[in-house]
Image (cartoon, rainbow, N blue to C red; front, side):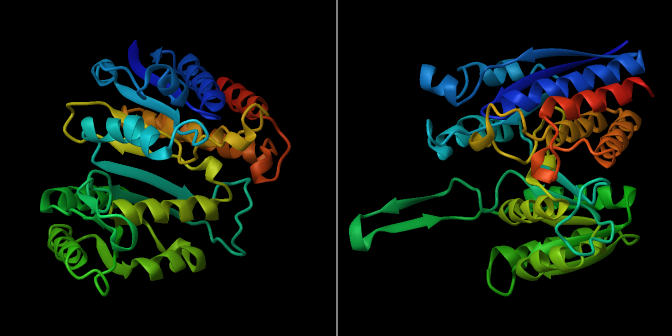
Length: 352
């Protein structure tokens, strides 16, 4: 029996609604598989936890989480209670940084059963590999003075090590897919970090002669994801550029509620973390209509990472079958509840 030990953080808002549903689906998969089981430990880390304890997680929270095979996260944030920079840096980004989750992976594809807002999406299916540890989201910088003379400086930090490992991950992934990598750059406007990014991309590409490459400026690339998304396979991008492009990817899929993500640790010292792209959505909390697909598809990525790619693909196939059958939440044009979508996915998995 293969047992997977999962640290579960439902988090805030709809995270607490979609996480139990995704766990039900994972248990349904285990029931079908027979030789697989999940053991969960749930953690209450959230904005409510912060209001009670003055911190987003316990002092030994990371020490506890590091013992799991993977971390399964719901959503973080409730700006009415806790400022976003406190909630995110105190939990989500703290886990990413301390667990050396240096790569963020976010797929986007035209899912069967969902109407893309694009007139002709042409079956797009691409993955954005985002450098996840430095770049524009570096903490280096500061502010000085106040009033009319106030100055704010935010430094973008690009290391060869961080840049190269993101690019090698993207190239290796492309070799498993359609052997094409697009680099997101802006070297015509950002005169130091982006020419450096381009140089590393060309250098890494020399080791992958069987993979086609192209560099696009970020503004043009964002437009291309709207006008011809089917042209892309793997896109490699800096921390900020990858963040923006993946929201575009979610939008052309039809809803940010269906988009999954993975934060990958490469050295094996710490677990990777899996989270949907959507936030805590406080406007729909308690209505029972949050889309569970993003959290469930994220579970599929967790299965892939833990070596169960065949099961992961079966899960994604069932998700699309359920969407095609009309089990859809309001954000993608349906009238089903969170639980109704989940129950249909679980039942179809059990019927395999």
